[in-house]
Length: 411
Image (cartoon, rainbow, N blue to C red; front, side, top):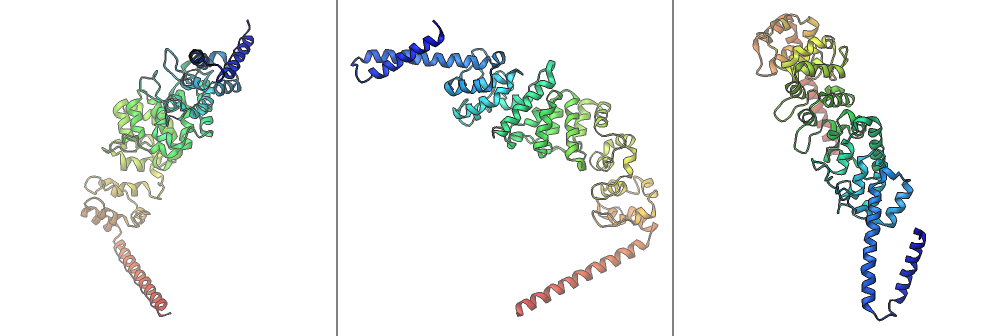
């Protein structure tokens, strides 16, 4: 007997039972039919659920899958006997079934797959994953070494569909640590997509309070993930030299953490892969301020960077002086080689001459101040004139303000 004939007979039988209800005084009959119908319903759920777990093999159209789950929605919550995965989770693990994931999630949210607030199973823990990650986290992290680019592309397309449906939202990137999880060469497209969507997350901290770049350095064994993260952060935060000098709560920079784990030669090779020797980024400005212990290593690799100015317009020497680490006693050559133009140039940030910067940073150093003034004594007069002029302007401005106030009150 064909399936069509079986279903037609079954339909006729169900119609008959519904017509008999209220007319046949035999409760035992109806109880037995109810028990049979419940078993049959569970059978439909099981058969359809198993079919959803086999999508990678059957490869039906998305319209067919939609028809299946709309007709038998309980199948969306049917767990595989071996993996204990929901269909939406099972779809994640094969390149041929990933495309069904958005549809299964959209239908699953209508029927609370995984429970309340589990977003159709997307936020349900994946029992096959030892780290207890949820479906979204597995989606951005999983890979197929033998089929890396097509798999990455399939996952990215699923992410785009989920975003379009409002099932992948911007806040997920930080709350679910998606950028960190996607930071691997095999998920490069997913990582770049998330970084473009939320560049702020590149410089953000993990829920545990650690800068993301430090978390990546500490967790991933290979330098490839650090290199990938640095290159992308440079794209969005060139003025900070990306995440290279970001500090944790103990004041340790990302470069220091990377060197501690991978060694100085390998780490600087990774940096050179991201930042060429002829860079226009003021990398030495940052090195002298944030990683002075590696300044020599930076200077021999980026010698032309000493002629650059940073985003504030500071020259390299102005940046060095502003750190407070340069004094005439510990680096006389630095001050001896300052030209008169450099000695007379006002710092664009503090609006001070070099001798004033030397006097105000750190604890101040009188011998440094004296030496700088001895080269151009007239700077002190210029500064005095500047102070008098600024005070006069402030007084005139204050008088003008008071006059206007009196006039307004008089009106």
